[in-house]
Length: 137
Image (cartoon, rainbow, N blue to C red):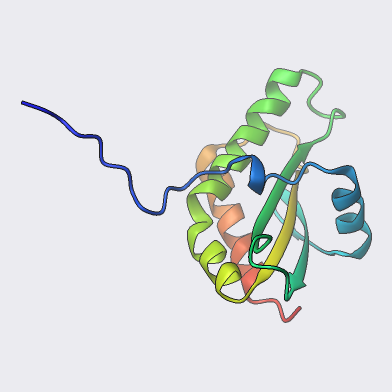
């Protein structure tokens, strides 16, 4: 008996091409982007319209300050939880951006002082994405 591995057509991944890594892009996002708070995150986003089809989609970044989380293990865990919450909820947003040839640059900064629960981060990222999708910019 042979088993085949089924791969979904729209895999929910967050690959290298979807990461916000370049310093120039991050600096321009912080200078020109819109900022709002969704506990426990401060969210910066910049929506670029009429981009080439190859650049359409979302670029995502996340950060945690050293001030309250001295150990890199803790900071990395918080970033991993945030990336996972975004990865699981990005499908509708990505499809909308690609259909309209738009690019979204979004950066989440964790501002709370305690380690987060996965569910609370999931709810906060969901609220932030809803707020971004309803924004007029």
